[in-house]
Structure formats: C-alpha cells, structure tokens
Length: 216
Image 1 (cartoon, one colour):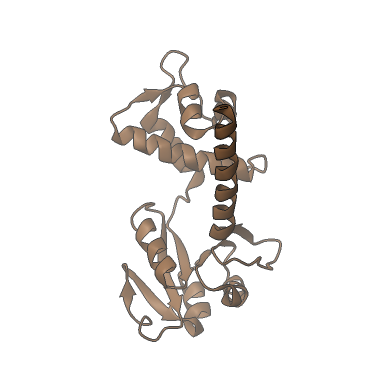
Image 2: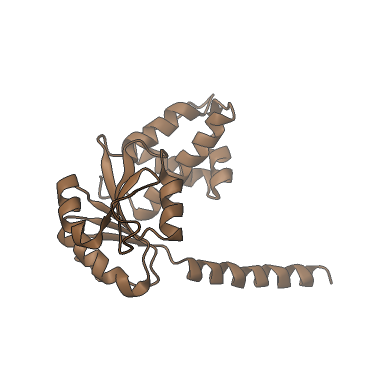
C-alpha cells in the first residue's frame, strides 16, 4: 500500500464503497463527486483527492461510473486472495460480529473463533468452527491468519492479543475497552462503544440546547 495513503483516506474509501454498493442496488449508474461527497459528509474536493490516490478519475460529463468505481476501490482495499480473520470471544457481541460479516466480503472472512466456554468449543457457530484458547497458536499459524478481532472482556484482551501476535497476527480490531500494548509492526483499531455513546450523548445535549436558543 502506498505510504502516502493515510488511515483516514482508507476509512473514507471504505465508506465510499459501501455508499456505491447501496446506489448500485438502487439502480443508479453514475454520480458526480459532489453527490458522493454529500452522502459521505465530506467535500467534493476531498472525494476527488481520495480517488486520485487510487488512480481513479471520472468523466467530466458523466461523473463516476458507480459499478466501476466500487470495483476499483475494492481492488485497492481488498487482498487479491482470501484473507482469514480470527475472532476471540463468541458471546453476544462476538456472535453479532460473525452474523454481520458473513458473506459481506468474499476475500475477507472469519475462519476461526475462540472461546473459553466448553459448550461452544468444537462447535460450528454462524458457519465458523470454534476452538479453545489453548488451540489458538496452532490454528492461527496453520491457517495463516493475520487479522484478529477481540470481543472479550477488558481483563482478557491483552492476553488474547499477545497470543494472536505471537502466532503471526499483524492487525487487530479491538472491541475491548482497554488499550493494547503491541509491537510497532502490529496495527490496532479500537472500537470503544461506551466512549462513542458518551460522545453522541454529549453532542445530542449540545444540539438540543442550541435548538432551544434558536427558538427564543
């Protein structure tokens, strides 16, 4: 991946692809940068810069081809071969994650799950075989897994991350509300739902106060 492509650009490209997929399903064939920008909550100039970073440009008269642009972003973001993901924690959150990602990306899928519950181990859940934590190093190495998802309590997150990293994982999606200590060559994306909800609640109060002031 080119070093000039930032994390924020990757995030926006992923958002563009999802929006383009929805447009394609709705029967749309073309759109302009300002239309995609409005849907994504950014500027048209930002959209054009992001698409230039992957070498894509539209037509001055017809804009962007919805299907072609979505496929172009996919070729940039996705691995050309299958990329397996390990999920640690098959509780309510873990099961929801498995159900959400099932069939969503053909080359990026959860291929192994791990849990401490003996009633889940050695079972196939949401189409994914669940293993014990003791089997994690062997399974991750044998499957060549480089991506892991942590859906475990905070007290178990660091230990699970350490085991995954030692087995070869180089990217972690962390749903546990705790910062992880990992080597510099491991990328971590933290999803703290409590922090996000608190932020939404704060700005909801701010917007409500502003609206009340505007009515005076």
